[in-house]
Amino acid sequence: MYIVINGGGKVASYLAKTLLESGHNVALIEKREDVAQKLSGELPGSPLIVRGDGCDASYQEDAGMSRADVFVAATGDDDDNLVSCQLAKVAFGVSRTVARVNNPKNEHIFNALGIEAISSTTIISRMIQEEATVGDIHTLSALRKGDMAIVEVTLPVDRCVVCGKKVADLPLPKGCILVALMRGEDEVIAVNGDTVMAPGDTVIAFTSVDHEKALKKALTGE
Image 1 (cartoon, rainbow, N blue to C red):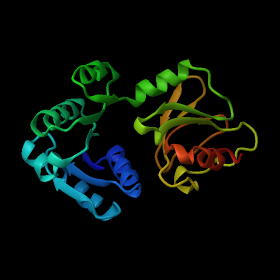
Image 2 (image 1 turned 60 degrees about the vertical axis):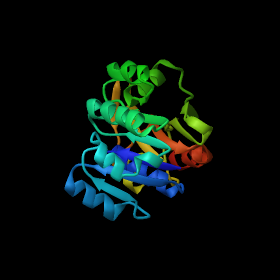
Image 3 (image 1 turned 90 degrees about the vertical axis):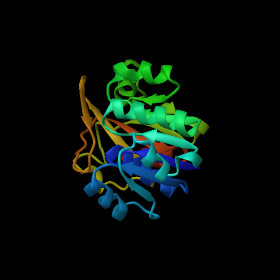
Image 4 (image 1 turned 45 degrees about the horizontal axis):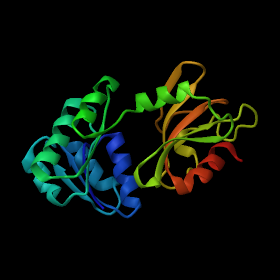
């Protein structure tokens, strides 16, 4: 597939890297020059990176939007994500648009316009209300075509193999991304490379379905 991503932050860059490593063709639109330059040196396969505003039709055209199978708006601004998705649908006829929604209250607006809205806050809150499968892996949301999923893994309280270690040092399967930790009854921690895990943490991760078991083994040793 040919996928165009608007944004160059952590969410967009992780997504681009995962898609590229899975064999898809990817283009990114990023307005910040320093971020665009950094991405050009970090992402595998030398993807097309367009420096400009993803809400502008000329930059979407430069990114090859007319032949895109999917458009993903992954900036930290809901207004920009909404406008860029609408532009991709109306001006270029992209059949599938997906948007990161930073404020869950905006989800209904995206859905009403036929845009697939993904809010990590909503996903986590739904999971909290469900019974967790303690010590096991539980699929929260299977994405389209069933090849990717958002999952949770609860770390053992005793003999935790990853506790006390930084996320950047963990031997995670290829393409698996740790998104957040739930600690205790009400603490939610956004994950970065310096995040240190603790016994009993519940890990929210984005992974291919094929790597779910390998992810569990890497995090729990089981």
